[in-house]
Image (cartoon, rainbow, N blue to C red; front, top):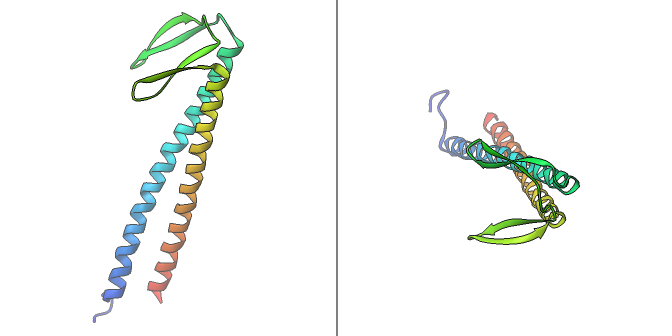
Length: 134
């Protein structure tokens, strides 16, 4: 075997490192997406708090694709929530805010788990690289 060539064990290790690196990139992307979702959930919770405190206040209601409708908040005691499959339920603003905050907490937990997994992958890659350099 010539100097600079990899033996089969080293080739196998390089393939594993590449796979782990790809998984790390996937986790990094997921962490970023989850982080944005968490921020959005907390923004929603803050908006719900403002709606609850300010009955009759003017608001901009999103119609879609950056189009908004100026409107006054009338009934600020309850909201309609889409829970999936076209099912809509009515909740108080307090209940909706609590639900959004729980969702944010679950997302934050997922984010922490992904960060931990990414740290483990990074450590494993570093260990494999050190082994290959021996």
